[in-house]
Image (tube, rainbow, N blue to C red; front, side, top):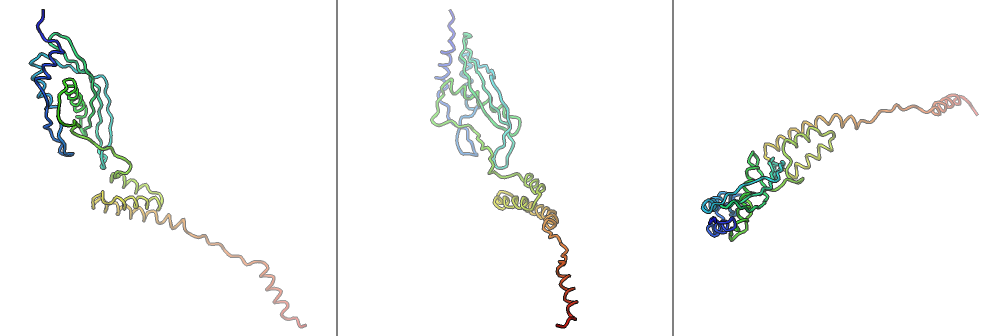
Length: 237
């Protein structure tokens, strides 16, 4: 008869040995503490080894998208994963847990980050590892919206593609409202391009405002009246 622990018993021993995991990692940008993947794995891994528990991941679902973040519209890879983790005990019996993970990155690390988030969540929830605070992610982002700043390159394109003075002035109006969001060098470039485009559109405007000259013809009645007056001038009554 085997004396090895069942997977339930082994995970119970791991839970008791690990105890709570403090939030020692710090999100400097947003000013809060969290439990990062390294802190969790460093606390749990030695106890998993001690009680003979192996964890095997299996990706059930995966999606990748690109989103624009913040006022500068930085392109970020956005990854979502659904992962099943199988905890295998010393006797070969198992416990399965399925979690999701989500992450963003401007380089090639979005998938790795999402997998780390998923594994951290699986360990924290499967082992019920306590903490005395909420557990937000290390990084969070704000999606761009229509009120965010228009990239300088897009502003220049709008100026160049303006077909009328009105459309050009609408770009100028937008810049006047959001000039604090651009650097002095960018605003100077916008002014130069605006002046060039306005000069280009000015001949078109002047041509459209020209008043056609119509030759005035003297009515025939005027000619007849003059002829009558000249003939009757020598008549005496």
